[in-house]
Amino acid sequence: MMNLPAHSQESDGRLQLERNTLRLLCSVLLKPGTRLEICRLLDPAVFHDPLRRVVFEEIRALGAVESRRLRELLPARVTNRGFPEFDLHDFLAPHDVSEAEIDKLFEGALLLLDQSHPDEEQLAN
Image (tube, rainbow, N blue to C red; front, side, top):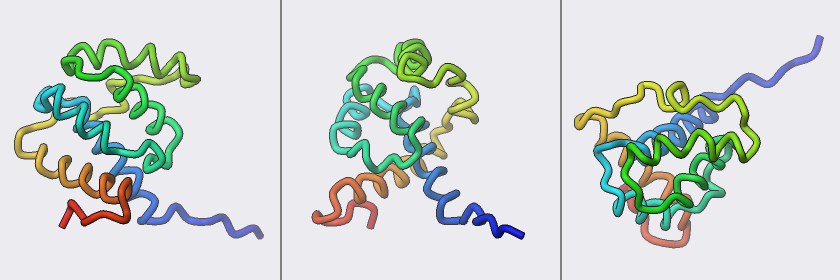
């Protein structure tokens, strides 16, 4: 009988961290300039999941657009990058980010920023 590797909690946590960072970047509560700055600081390589990396790269490429416009443009751009089944609504579920949740999402983004710049002072501490 073959032993299949279990999906580790660390891997699940990592995917959740990536997902939450993308939810933050798509949030209407985040100003376009703030999104642009976070994207500038984040290294795409910290996104281990290929779909999440493509979504991040497209968010970054769109620049300082309003979040509603970003959400309009993102699905076609991700589809054109090789993910024809991409559904932004499902991807960002829960779709809306509350003001109370935004701090948690920022904290996750800071963890990814720390991984983007491992030789610098830690931001998430």
